[in-house]
Image 1 (cartoon, rainbow, N blue to C red):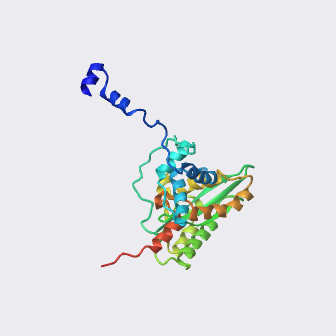
Image 2 (cartoon, rainbow, N blue to C red):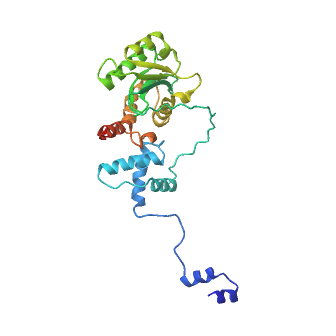
Image 3 (cartoon, rainbow, N blue to C red):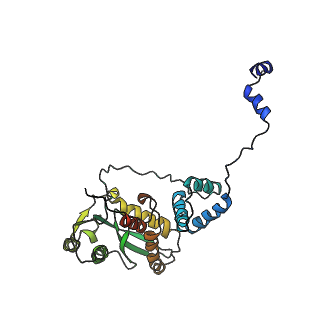
Length: 282
């Protein structure tokens, strides 16, 4: 073959290709069942247009496990979503990097609770103010309050503190000290709020000024609530938003896949922890 190629002045690979004949036509990779699987993907993206391929894959695999089918590789989900132009636009925002050496996420549940607030604007100019409390380990939103008549008051924050203690411990006082992390807003720093936290065995902690990274779990949830719920639902007036809020929080706790929880929802993660046998102390 070498002598023939040298005589003709062509590459040996060219002669080999001619002997083999025309090969498989090049084109995008396809797998059997892609069309049917793309229909399942579209059903998820139609209901949750802000979800990327990882969360779409998590929901698809959750449904498959429920009926006893094998999970699907999320790379296949990405390939099909790209083919159908269903992927999200990459973020191009530039953020100022601030030094943050601490760690907000707690190693276990009921060690550190964090609280923050946000405002949801309505199309008619009204604003709904929301405050919430979240566990920094399992990411469950334990309780929340909302109002359309002014901002969040200290009394609302104290009601949330009591609801968290009663919901997690079934008592009016935590059995061990639990950190309550918040910013320096007046409802949190008020003397009545700090004293009430002490009575519940909560340790009031406050983030440094202009340091949102110090309460990163809350900041991440605020972004999730605005992006995946408020932005894609109708907000004609405050009453409509207030009526939708319970479903949004319930969906987040029970269905929203969280990247920090191995793509489980907060309630799924809590259930997986309770079903895991304790390690042998010996």
